[in-house]
Length: 602
Ligand SMILES: Cc1cc2nc3c(=O)[nH]c(=O)nc-3n(C[C@H](O)[C@H](O)[C@H](O)COP(=O)(O)O)c2cc1C
Ligand code: SF4
Image (cartoon, rainbow, N blue to C red; front, side, top):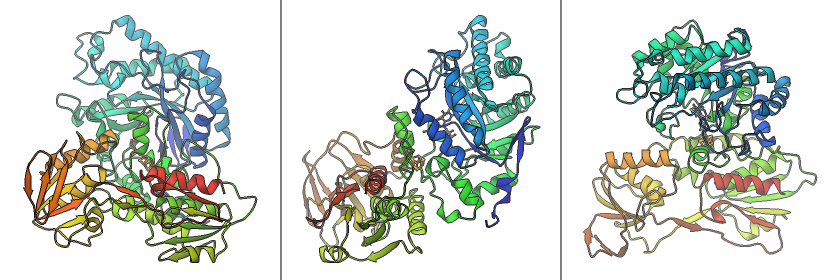
């Protein structure tokens, strides 16, 4: 096995008495895979075992409810508040014995974000502390190596820590008191040697809340009681702790750096995706790093780094599909780049090896080709352009991470003798000449054009994003305010004055809430004018007529009215599956998951 170029990641470290094999922490990520009644499921177990196979030093199971129903947070949160759940947790922990990862669980009480903690009676506080003790005892007896107290994200412990939510004048008005009493209760139940870590709000990012100086002081006090501190974010905007794609890698590792040095390890979290970034943080800012979405996207991230296969890492691109599922829809999480999330099915060798033609180089086609190849089929891959629609999706500002997905497929689909590449147009004759057993049609979509493009005036979003036309210092109208229209507008607004016209009452509808808010804010900062509830009724050189009677004088119009499926031909005698946008225009997740499914069904 080649020696890893990143030895810092693989240096063992102790959390209390427990030795971690490396510096990677898989943090709590709510999956919604538990049952509504709080019991664990087979899928829940498989999801975490798959991450354990990836050898992270520490795996922390998601937000688990210590006090039901008042402390529950989300419909499918697992419960650890009563011995009724003990057996489930014990079976869960037992399954981890064969892996090297240490196992923890995040103990969470949602608290009362709107009311704070002022109204709680001393008896009630003691009762809640007792419930943390019970939860920790369940985890400890079940075989967990440690537990983590959720002390960030505006939840109960954070509410005690923050001056915005704790104005008490009794003993509980001391910010750290509640967290310290919890720790003592857990030590009483589980022994002082049973490690307890805390995910700590070291900055509330909210006026009047915990600032970093105060966070540093809180961290110092709590480091006398806890065995590891994760430097995280408090009551402030959710966007900062579930950051959308445009955020810079490792942007908030400085929070960990600022609270150091402490006498316990400090962990940095947030948008850490590449081993270079991870080791740079380990060198100067923190003792451990968190890889959350990075290990959702590719549970083998660390194994690939260890084996010198960094190029094969499927990096999380920050598409927020997982957040949309968990936070907007409260359904089981899914991943835009890893179709196995939520299925946890293995890719098995095919019983009958087939000749498979995949037509299309976008995410649906490339995922289908990858899985068909892994199953041992002979794959013939046709494409006009490797990466397909991903190439234009990666162009608008802040969307560069999408290129990572193209690179991933390039790295796994080239330089091997199991996939034959056919750049250029696929024709029926070329496909049939290969005598395929199956065809996967992943030919994507084409822009909808209510008016034919006109040179020097009327273009499609593709013309703009592919830079077939360069618009500068113009007054540009973008017709259509869906995701593509808004991102095209953001791109154009760097050098033009831009107006979006959308017939629906709002723009960028259907996007994940935080990413949408980020995009809308960007459009506003770039002074993009937005006209909603407005239809374009006519277009001629230099003018656009609207259904409100207005005629706008413009230099150029860009059509972003969406796109329609494109299937260039059909093959009567060969079993064919149509996937991705060619079937119905949607997003990266639909494309990769349908490509995956088509190839597993071959
Ligand atoms: C879908 C989703 C669910 C999450 N659930 C939790 C949770 O249960 N508890 C928690 O403390 N943080 C939760 N987080 C935050 C992550 O633990 C992590 O801090 C965040 O994703 C940033 O790290 P990353 O960029 O490595 O993913 C969640 C994040 C995501 C994306
Ligand atoms: S869904 Fe998107 S943001 Fe979430 S882990 Fe997968 S690639 Fe990352």
